[in-house]
Length: 409
Image (cartoon, rainbow, N blue to C red; front, side, top):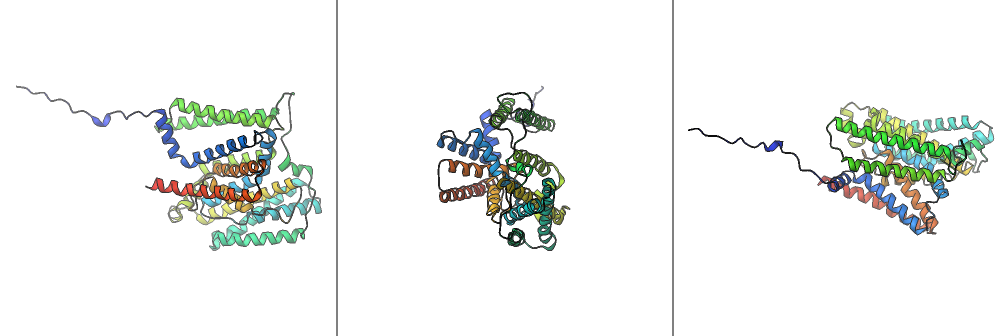
């Protein structure tokens, strides 16, 4: 008598349950709640004030003004985000903006220095100021809050001394174009600004290739990727957003010069923070300083370089602000440090450090910029504007705390 035994079913090789597109989208939103939350908030604010202002907010001239009026804050926010990621703070950037603007005014107005040379020297002044503060923070061990608080008083006082309490103007046209200029028109006449259309097309090609390359790498390492239909929808949404933004700028005077500066910083520093070794060391220091030091991260050198970078960006913001005002003034830069810190936290930074992106700082700055412009267009008083911006900052930090608690459960 023979008996047959039924082979046991291999339950471990059963294919995983397929998820619908909606479930994948919901899971992706949950895992990227911090980034998507900022974008959703920005989109909501834009739509709200676009309707409230009867379509005035997104007129081409207003979009250009929004970029030029907030360029210096966005530059400061990018540097401040990196400082906060490393677990520090910089309270001196507003005063440094005023000091560099004053020095550039002295060099160009009093000493007739060429504006290009004055710009380079101004950036060097910012680097030296950042190195001064970075030395005390990194190598002496004084907390950044104290060092930069002293820097706030120091640079504000130096501004008063250099300018002798008066404003200096005017600046050469080339220097003013840093904040007020647009890239020149070229090519045959069309209804749009030709170089802006070319830049927009190049941006679309770059973004699509980057998304395709990222997806290809994920597939090569057998990582989970979004379904092809959802990925294609994402590309269509990115392309539509770039096309709309490009046509808006191209129908006015084209790309502002300050936007090119910000894009260069966004691409360069974004790449450094994502891919370069020093960028990973900055995140490591902010996440767990002790573990980072045990892993071989040279914490003092990284901290020093972070504040040198912040000094250069504050100097660049000072030149942009002085160029926009067409004067070096003793009162320049008041509360700029608060605007930059608020933009960083709205953009996803955390007080505990180790969290945040350069792109998030720009989005946080745009949230504040759209709020400022939108509330001005609908004639909300400056007193109520301060209240609303304070509540927005509180809501952003509260959302961050709630999100971390939810993830930790």
